[in-house]
Image 1 (spheres, rainbow, N blue to C red):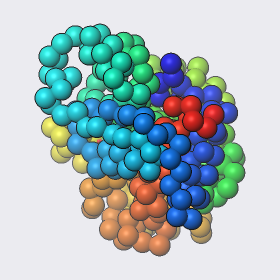
Image 2 (image 1 turned 135 degrees about the vertical axis):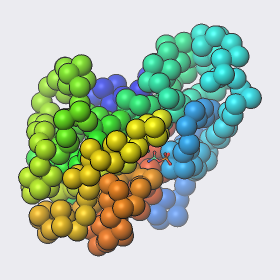
Image 3 (image 1 turned 180 degrees about the vertical axis):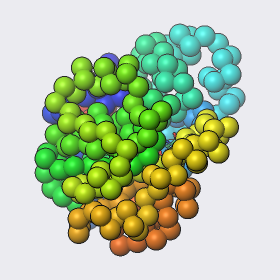
Length: 306
Ligand code: CP
Ligand code: NVA
């Protein structure tokens, strides 16, 4: 049984396969064809935090592929622990083919996967957002072709999205430069895991955003306070104030460098309107590609196009 909890679950070849399935399905979709390669397959969705992109792109993607999606709200009892994780997982696995789960704690997704007899996909935890990173690599591949050798600049908090991108960059041979202040960088335990999972990752960490964007083909940022960190909002706003992606910072990047953001954004904090809405911004294409990436993930996981 294959799960997608973090990008460490995929070999570079498997990641490449997902990206190429997604590309094929996107080309067909744009030609007006929705290939129903997963007829009768059923996906359950459990979300403990808010979502627009992840929830809708998975549900729409599954519909395009001929399967169906069901959203399990509070009344399913998962997050309220109406029954044990083991009972919930074993039973759900009998009923559906795949479960997408967004949880506050990473361990919740790990535990569900341990007991579930169907595939489990991480739809975001505090530690990882693998589906986002796959869509981002897909977008960069679309824009720049081969990814190996290019540099991605991450500006700001070393959060769940940054962690997944680090793994993703390592798998595809992209260099990652993080401009992140002390206290917001990857911790020692994560760095040790990263070294094991993606030994070839070329990661540089700096406190200078200008230095980070200079050689980058893509400049990426995310909110300074992720979901669940609302109480730290003010402190984070102060600590990360020098890490805003604005027109001045983008002026140090090369011509042709694009701006990425997983969204939702807090305009005027981590990114200014002129960058988010400006000519270098590809955030809408990036968000739209969540659909195609999810289709690649589902088709690969459910074995329709290995
Ligand atoms: N980028 C992303 O995952 O968006 P949602 O939180 O809306 O799903
Ligand atoms: N880092 C953000 C990503 C949202 C898609 C969060 O976890 O809230």
